[in-house]
Image 1 (tube, rainbow, N blue to C red):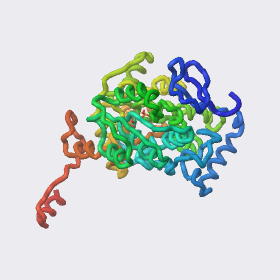
Image 2: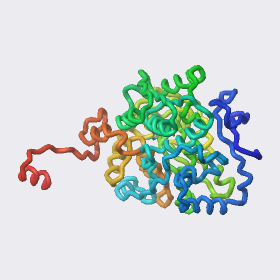
Image 3: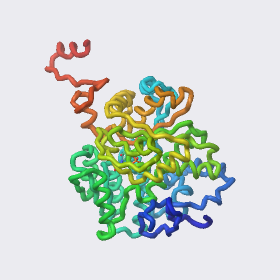
Image 4: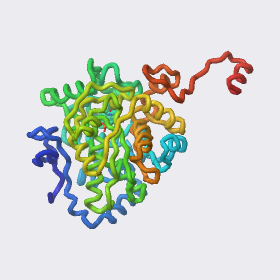
Length: 428
Ligand code: F0G
């Protein structure tokens, strides 16, 4: 459509104004932020040059790896209302040991755990919180497995907005809870799982006057699109063959599909990479759905990768659209495969949290099955920082994770403070 951006239902196409406090369409469908891209048609090269020029501008908005792409995120948003921590600008790594372990040397890992609060959530949160503040939100809220909560808590405090976060009582990693407490969010532990927490948020939001910052908030996904814009720019706008991403609530999958479709529409890229979504076997409703002709599927979720312990992903329909549009696929890996992948990724010197490493485990599996070919170029996303879940790391290396036989444990040893004891350890 011509003119400015608006909200559009991903199911029935009904339109709403950007400022309307809606989360779902009247028909129950999810909303997209729809942009008028017609003014960029045929001007892809100019847009690339504009994005690049901002790397040297020294302005606050341009220092953000989200707002640097603002024409494709939230065009026209007043930059003085921006709530930013300079998110994005995350590095690309080629890991030697991980490459050998996966049987695929052409993998680049983009580390979204290098964002300010340690996960990709900051990319969406800078946009959603800026928008919420500008629209006069009274209180922001999210259900979370932990990372969204940390990002909400941080950005809300920066914005001067009160925040409340709802997390599963017994399945949220320590680093994430400590962030939410530290940033001053009202921290609510739910006797239930993430799916129950999100249902509660959605049921209560109108009555309690809450602005929801889960990925049902379409502004979140606009920010998360920049993971791909930044990656494509770094690759000279020459798309890889595959994008491999962990799947939980499926916000990233949906955002990536939208980013590629838009980038192709205005000529930033000439073809779409294939998206491979990797889920933990115990939390794999999207994998089951994919395997069964996209029949709806929900499950009781359980996995060591608590970030993606989700049985009823809210962005499912948008994610189906993304997988279909890119000729993508969905796979699942076991908890043992995830933790063994994590041990290898970590040992390459940067590391990531368990959920992030489903991407490495998934690549290994897809290479072994001959789906990803050895000469294909792969971009994998590491979604969260190693320090988020110290408990899982220590238990893996101490071989005390239930039901998991650690393939590469790095056991700590305790010695008396004597030279002999030290020599014995170092020579063994
Ligand atoms: N990786 C990490 C580290 C995450 O925290 C999440 C989601 C995902 C992957 C899955 O991403 O939902 O876009 O498919 N964490 C959410 C949270 C659910 O509450 O922090 P997705």
